[in-house]
Length: 233
Image (cartoon, rainbow, N blue to C red; front, top):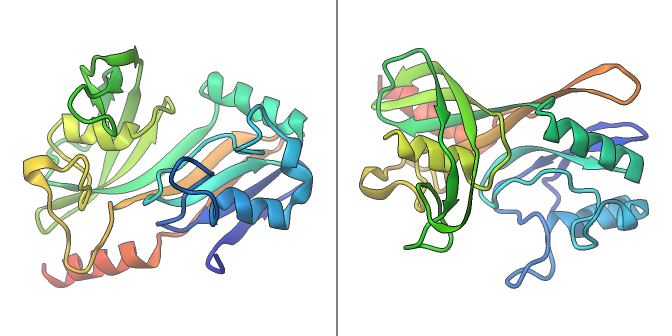
């Protein structure tokens, strides 16, 4: 896990650049080599931070194959503070996503509740009936159109599992190289081996009152995929 980088740190928080392929915490299939294992080695004092001992300090999560910025609380006060900000939707999350197809409008909003699919337990879908359907809102704006794809900034206003992936697939523009949600539109730019989704930045007010804006540059494999598409223009 040498490729994990610290983007920001103070007494309350540490922000990590999570590489793709890294699982956040232990589960039935992963009992070592997770981000939590790395965190406990680097910051042993977070062991009892938060509400779940298996996820110490973790205030939000990224999918295994999504790269980008992850915020971790270093104290219980910071954890509760950040949890309250997220509940009030006062943390601005910005993702970069390459989707299949050309989006015509410059910006849009997807307001559609999602729940587990009855056909595939791994998926969260609009209209899903397994378990409770939960409100989900995603805004997006076009950055660039190229080679049959559209690069967008996505702004999830809620924090549902697979939200951006599910929402973009729902409106007919699945994330490039997303095997779970791509369906018949599944395709990858040459050389890309995972979904093109990157948690680019977080913006929020710190407990001190200062505004924080933490960015994580686009991962190398995603940069390479864009270079391929630019070269094909």
